[in-house]
Structure formats: structure tokens, C-alpha cells
Image: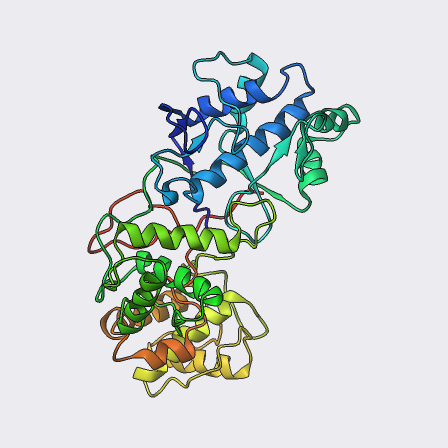
Length: 405
């Protein structure tokens, strides 16, 4: 179940010129920005499906810039420029076409992405007559619309296999930086961001020690990796992830994965939904079985009556025996089937162990590294964005939301 993390900002800051030019910044509502660009880029008399296809490309490109923090990670104080050499046409103060406004009002928080990828598609486009590019042809989209293609068929004609995410969440735009430096002893989702980025960057820079596990715990291994990264990229090698180190990680991670390019390698991270599934039993396979097996393995380390199992995502006889043993131990009906009651009981016990013992990654590294296929942080999609609210003692991740396709 994919967690829709990329969000639509309520407002967006536009630089009225190329990135390095001395020009003013203006901050406008996101929906008005899209109406402005669409009114500047396309003709209001085009077929509605052509309007929709072009507006989806405009929205997706804009959200990609916001999600990857393309300009803030380079030290700029804006989200996007008005230069068509870099971004999209924006004319400060212009009026909007009514046909364009009507479509934007309906789909301003929908966007395109590649199946299995998290980031919005960097949906580049050009007019298709005086300028051609790898991406959507604006005039070509009108021709396809006149042939009877709908908006999704049009964008797939140019971008290939893409899917439509609808009703993305709307939030205040904010820096992804957590606000305070991360250092040895820190833990949580922001540490995961650092660990995942370090591991990806280490693939291209072998002098950076790769981390064996992404566990959300800032221990000695993470500190050593941060110091190596800082030395390579000319930062103070103190092992502390302050704002400068944070955004250098974001910039390198985005660049190496080509997240801001049309042919992206893609950010393929998924959120783990720990709420109970429909009943699972022998013969089932998949991610929920893997999570069940992981919980059973952890419980077996502390409860001798529960046998350990292989974490392979296959609910076979050994997993059923472990489930029966757990049900017997916790006084549940011994069915061998993991219903809501069994799942919640196992998770409650597992969660207690995880928070009181396993969070000590320095003293308990083997359990995490050898048994955890995915823990609640290691596959988070929150790579470059602030989650939208402060985190404090007692906070927890929200239940994953299913994408509307």
C-alpha cells in the first residue's frame, strides 16, 4: 500500500528570472501559479482533453521541483523560476483564461508519476513546432485530442507508462530540514532520510562507508559515514548533520537518482502499514506475511515458546506452527489464522520489545540486520519533505493512505 507523501503546497515562491539572475521573488497560491503557467503556455480554445493533459504535465513538473527541493538544496530561496530555459512560463500579475481555470480548479492536486516511483514525474514539455524535446508536445497533444484521445491516453503517448495520483494532500510548504542538527544518539524518520541518502551516495563514492542497515538510529556507523561524506564534499567533518550537510545530501541524492529528470531512476520507497490486514493464513504470500514473520522472529528472541521462522514472505507450515504457538502463549483461539485480534496482539507485544530493547542499535545490531526485511522506518517515502507537523514524545507515523488510481 503506497503512502502518498508528495504533497501540494498551499503557496509557491517563484523567482522572476533565471536562477542566478538578480530578480524579485513572488509567493503566490499554488493553484494560481498553475493557472498562470497554463494560461501562459497553452491555448484556452484547445480541446478539454488537451488542456487536461498539459495541465497535468505542468502540475507534475512543478511538484517535482517542490518535492526534490531542487532550488533550496542549491542554496536558493525560491521553489521554481519563471525562465522557460529552466522551468515554466510565469507572467506575474497576468489574468487567467476561464477554460484553463475550470480545469485547474478540478485537478490542481492530481499529478503523474511512474508506477512504483514516489516522486512526481518531471514532466518536461515543449511546443512541438519551433522547439521539440523528449516529453509532451503541446501542439501534438491538441492533435491527439482532436483524434479522440483522453488526457491520460495523451500523456501516456508522450511519457510512456505513467499513473495518475488523485487528491494528493495539501499542506503548507516547509523545509525538509528537521530544524535541529542530527547527531549520534538521534533517532527517527529524519535519521532514516540521512541513512538512505548516504547509502545511495556511497554507491558512487566508495570512500563513504555503506551502512549495513537503515534503522533510524544515529549510531557510530552512521556518524562515520557522515564524517566521510563531509570530508569528500568540503563540509566541516564533525559527524553532525546540520542544515548545510542535510541539503548537500538532498542535492546529491536527487542528482544521482536523477529524480528531477524525465528519465529518473526513481525513488522506490514504500511505507509500511502496520495496521492489521484481512485475515492471512497458510498459503498466503507477500509483504504482510513478511511483516508477520518479522514480528514472530523478534518475539521468539524473548519468548522461548514461539519458534523462529524464515522471513521469506511465504506463509507455510513453519509460519503456521509459530502462529499457533503465539496464539497459545497469548491465550488466543488456536486457529493458525492471523485475524485482527491475533495481529493486534502480536504487534502490541512486538512494539513493546522494539521500543524498549531493539532501539538500542549499538547493543542489538544483529537482530535488526539479520531479521528485519523492513522496519517501520527503513522504507519511508519521506525523503526530502517536512512531514507537516512537529514530532514529539508519543508521536507515531500515520496509517498509510492508498493511492486513488
